[in-house]
Length: 114
Image: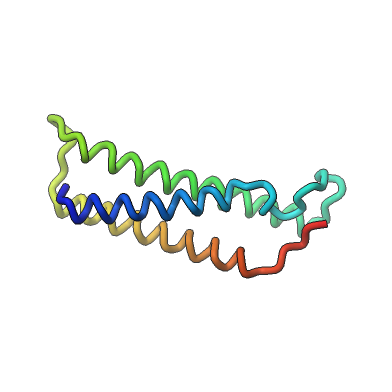
């Protein structure tokens, strides 16, 4: 992995961690402070969506971290060609950008917290 690729991944790692912090904070979830019985059907659906987003955020962060850890410590059997690494970086970057777009849209949307 070259230095430019590593720098790109570390930047994505930092950005995806910010998404993890937002998505995994229960205060940002639909129906925060309510029991499931107190939530409307819409709030329960929103909560389910929020939990899926949190799971996706963690997954993307873990994948980026795994790529960094795997390719910054070259050992026999884990060195990929630069082309393969760039493809991995591009895929993770696209996923991270999609996730950040979702986070930004969610931050701008009004929350129905009671």
